[in-house]
Image 1: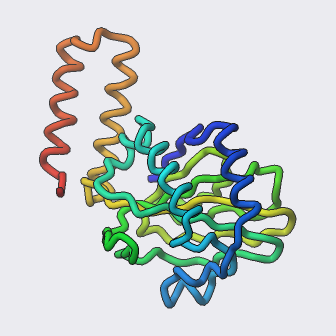
Image 2: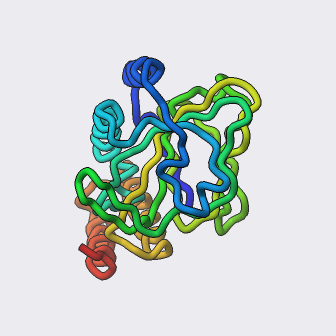
Length: 227
């Protein structure tokens, strides 16, 4: 299940992020890749342990955890410190699957990577190519979103970033461990929550059927949650 989440960052926040990143030093993106991914990865990234990367990452986490749609779709337990990459002309990331477990050497945090997220920091018209290609259960999806928008997808998916032919693509990416491990269960819970929120806009929140559906929502989380 791919979930598109708009307006994670405002225009002002995007401008501040880009200004700080434009003046930063970048390194080879293969420094954080697994053995298989390193063979097909050609991009640059902010050093993950740099103060700038950590500061911007904290702002990304603050923004996504304040977003109701993100919380509903991800039901996050732990979020890995966000990373930042950029692709110039000719750079790309071939088809790969993310590592099952990620560890952060600075904090000792270790997570199971249930979900991957890409937060676009460049506008689509700033570059050609650079689509995020995700092999989903419903076929291959090509994703190129406006700056400040985020896509959330299962980390088990094969995915790639196509080669840049013009301009520069800048993004943040990260992984999270969900309270709900199973993709199918997480999808059902998300769809139920979405339906409840639609009904709330048309009915009284205390309507008996909404109360019953809300109870079902929480009981489903209670049944599947891993803490």
